[in-house]
Image 1: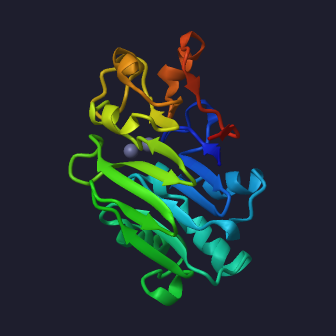
Image 2: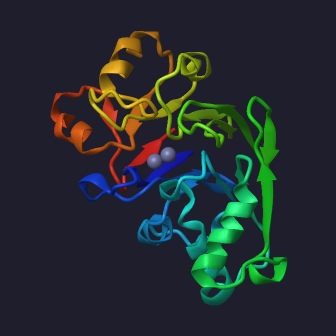
Length: 244
Ligand SMILES: [Zn+2]
Ligand SMILES: [Zn+2]
C-alpha cells in the first residue's frame, strides 16, 4: 500500500505547499484522506486518473480540507463523466456543506441531478464503519468548538494509518497510535501556544509515549518550517510517496 502526499500544507499555503490531500493506493482501492482545493491538480500531477478514486474521507469541514471537492464534481460532470458513485464520508454536515459549496461555485447543486453520482456517509465519532471495503474508526479531536473535527484511523489491506486531521495535541492519540503502521500527525506550529493545533514542542514531550511504527509530521506552518532542519522526525513533502 502506498500513501501519496498530494498536499501537506496548511490553510495558508505555507512554504508554497498544497493544501490537505493524502491519496492512499491499495491493491484494489484508491481513496483520499481530505480534499483541499489543490487536490485534483495534484492527483493529476501524480499520474492518477480521478475516475479511479473510490472514496474521499474528510476529517473536518474547514476549506483547506474539503474545498477541493467541487473540482472533482465538475471533472466528473463535464471532463471525465463518472457513472459509478463516488463515496464521501465525513462528519456531521458533510453532505450539506459539500452541496452548498458546489452550488456557490458552479451552479444550483441542490439536487441529486446537479451533482455527479455521489454517496454520502456520515461518520459519527467512536463508531466503526466500512466504506467500500475500507475500515474507518473516526474519533473526535480538539480543533473546532461547535462543529466536529475527526481524526481517522483507517484499516485497509492489513495496514493501519492514523490521520490526526487538524487538532491540538490530545492523549487520545496515544491509544489510537499504538501499533499503527503510520501516524500522520499535524504539526502546524513549533512552540506557539495555539489552542487548536499541535505544536512541535508539545509533540516532543509525548514522543516517547507514541508507539506507532512510523510518524510523519504534516500541515506545517511557517514557524514550523523555519525550524525544519533541527527536527529529527520525518516531515511530509508534496509529492512524497510513503510505502506502508
Ligand atoms: Zn487545516
Ligand atoms: Zn482545520
